[in-house]
Image (cartoon, rainbow, N blue to C red; front, side, top):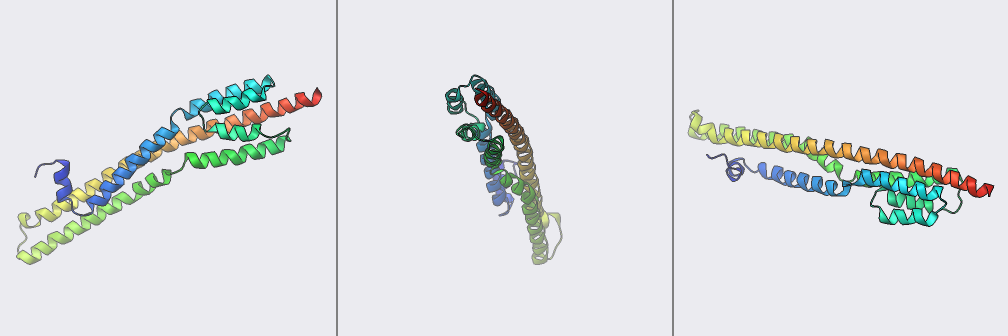
Length: 211
């Protein structure tokens, strides 16, 4: 038996096919999240710098324009806060926190799929292992002998299922951990951005109140 992927799939039994589906889903989620996360952390910092500079110059329109120009998860969050008309600092903080939590939820969307696959794949492989061993014993019972050639096919199926389950699980867990680190860094940048904007808006309102 050549160790090509189609051959392994052919000899791995039916349990290998759910693992193939899981691997495709893992790749799809990983690439989709990478596309969502691209430049998000840097864009959030850039947007914060531009908005704070505009607010310090009392240029509210410039701050809103920056939210439309710079691609960042913070864009909609800051836009909601900037749209408030001379609010109290507590109100600004409430709006920023609410919008930030919604954005963080969107950032972490679908990551649970990778965690689920990482936990589930070894058990699918284990199920395939059990099925392969059952087939081996059944073949022994049918033939009435216990030679290696009798049980080889079932043992091969069992080992392939085990290996496939472990490979898919490792890939899913690595992808999950990597994306979680990226998501947490974006969430931290978003929190710092909201704090900076809240401070800038508070100073702007104080300046307007003194004038």
